Length: 115
Image 1 (spheres, rainbow, N blue to C red):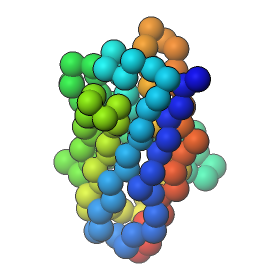
Image 2: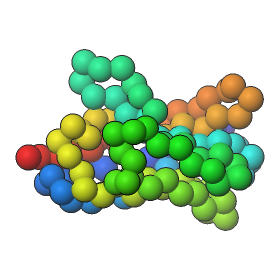
Image 3: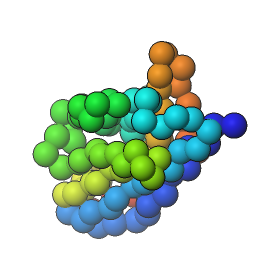
Image 4: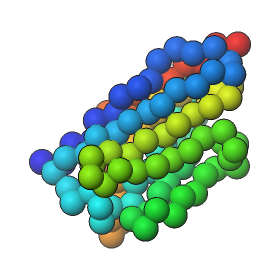
């Protein structure tokens, strides 16, 4: 059974930082591309950042220079370091594992940035 469990969300003031973690089980983590998505109220879910099995990362323009995605294959965990947070970053953040077009999702963790 595949499980992706996110943690690290919370309430933070604008300009602050949070680090999200996603612990995976039930998959061979090292062969999966991993990503972080977010969904704000009334908006579609969007890709925030992703990292390939080779460690190549991608960021949506709105978070470039502020967010950093990383992975630890020994711990089956992917991280999202979020700095200089803005109120518009407020959303539920979801972890995603993808290989061969078959995605798995975590349950999500709420991030709220106050102004």
